Length: 273
Image (cartoon, rainbow, N blue to C red):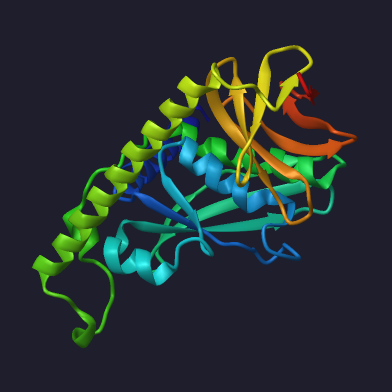
């Protein structure tokens, strides 16, 4: 029995290591706007959460509506993964996600995330976040793979000369680096200005503050920018920060943010300073 368990453990370790090596060849992940079990686009803000969880682990993730698949494939070849999300279970929510390359080959399968919380939104969030912890066991770090760049299946009349393809990839890398630099510069500027401008809303414990933006609110902890509140079509907000992920809503000129921490429901209340 001990020998059998040892063999199983060794095989599992080889499987994990194999996924580790494979994932390092990919830089981008495309998340669908709507999966089969969802009744409408981004239901429960689950797709936004998937993008956030992937980016938190080092990937560059996009919603399909934000970045056309054809554009990503043309410039990045098989550095692109497509995320699929399956739901099962009658009692509680069970979620498993897979990552496949642009030729449809399966590259990664997550463990099952499960939640039996009665509130659907919280249940989906908890199940997806648990499934995403599968990536925490993998030391992901993108590594340029020339073979993957040239591995896209295209017809001869659609193929570009390798020089042009390499130039396209280099231009994409430069653009990404420039955008990252601009984003960091913007965040630094916002952090510097945070101490100089009045906060729109402040949490009653004085820990957090909100500043209105074009897309919703930016979230600060002290003078540090930690995330944002993104407004949904339903009128509520998806709160995505480095400290917590939850749901926010307004009531009588007061903003509330609900999230889960250590298995406990947490509530933040924001008022005018």
